[in-house]
Length: 234
Image 1: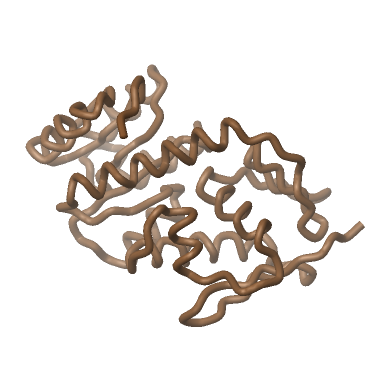
Image 2: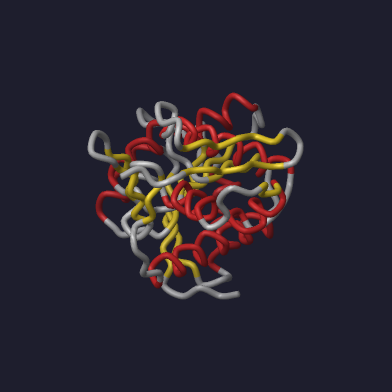
């Protein structure tokens, strides 16, 4: 599948690997800006529109991968951010997702797998831009999928696109057991172990939004999936 006029920002500390990734993506008509340090990547991000960011967790510069991700997320809540690292540690994965990344991929990664993940994000973006829906009431919260906002009369959360997609899927399947593989296939585009660990981090973030609201429960059914139950509170 080819995508035209899609701009990708790559922040990669390994020049040879970065060039390999950039050359591969350009074959699919992506416009690629590649930076060798986080400060340069931030400079380009502030000057140009990008549709997706691929960031090396250990990219050199004052702005390392985590700092760059946090800054990008503060500036743009919608843009997909994929973090990468050669260490493949659970701590790095969780820290990266908590910083605002939508996905985490271990280096060296298969370029076809990277392409697949990018395409999944772009398809999600297109569906989001075409979706028109009324806010969903979750307990005393209003979930505005189009604007990526979850709020009640006390707090307001600006969600990432991945969080909103996951929240919407849970809301469309209330009060029933949802299998892990179904969530992964529908939201991440693929069912595998590492994506499953990413999903668990996002589920934990969603659970935190409702931790003081007994009328909303996100239950983990160990080894099987999740059950999301809620009722409208006037």
